[in-house]
Length: 273
Image (cartoon, rainbow, N blue to C red; front, side, top):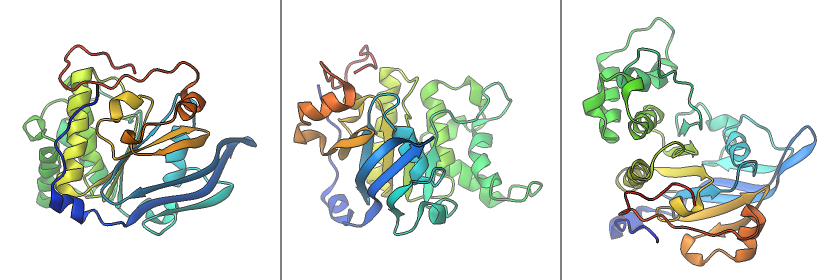
């Protein structure tokens, strides 16, 4: 069953101009002379939530690494806000949440300390945090509903709370584009639902453009504007309501795939789709 999220306001719809944030044209990427992405044509427009879905090994993380400039294509063209990935990677335009963030939950750091890592990463090693920095950290935690947990030990937070703090860290430089790699991994159905509602709120109230990858097409279909089904090639790129062709699903997920659309009102639903 599909989730029913609040609709965007008419003003929000009008504000979503046709500016294209991400464009990939015939992009090919390989590892050790073996293509892992083939002929990728893909775009994301301003103010959209777009998810790239596919099974493990389909090239989703490689696609993100290529967009972020960590991996170079051997053919094709990529533009983010009209520039190369390398040109925008350190511009502050992009906030990034990797699949396995390097945050040791055993280390005695608070939620505020985790958010501060983005700011400290742009400063000389021994430069102290300013009052403005601390106010920014407070505001970022407030944006994700975690201001009240600013002083809590990060390792003591729930999985959903940790993800919210990591989103706040990604937002610390006020990016326009948020890129997320499997952000709901490890969250139960209720926490996952709350997390996706947060992403929609950030898009609708603050104009963020969001690109995320996921293996769970059923979970993301209720909140995204468009889906790209990837398995080395993109086999479908459109709105979830467009009824994804069965041939495309078979090429991405294999034969006999069944889609289960998560119900936001179900507290006992599993995460697998």
